[in-house]
Image (cartoon, rainbow, N blue to C red; front, top):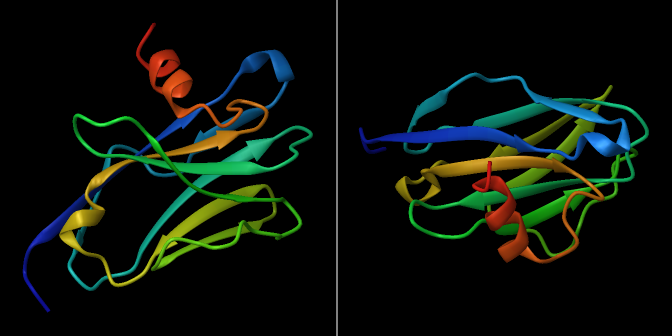
Length: 128
C-alpha cells in the first residue's frame, strides 16, 4: 500500500421547503491512506423519498454517483468501489480501497433537491 493520504470532504445539499433535513456526521476533511476504506455518513429526518450522493473534483461540476431509498434499494449500476447504505435515518457511502483519485468533495442530498440537472446543482451551491 502507498503512503499517500486521500483527503475527502463531505457537504450537504438540501431544500428546506420540503421540511426535511440532512446533516453530515463527519466534520471537515477525512484523511485516509491509499487502500483504506472510507465511510461518509449523513443523518436525515423527515419523509424522505430517496437520497443521492454526488462527487465534485476541484474545478469541476458535481457528478451524480448513486441514489438509495431509505428501505435499501440502490441505483444500478454503481460506480466501482462505492457502496451506499442506510440504517436508522443515516445514509452512508463506503469507498473501498481508497485511491488518490477519490480526493474530492462529496455531497449527500435529499430528493427532490436535484432533478437530474447537475449544472443547476452546481449553480445553486455557489449562488449564496
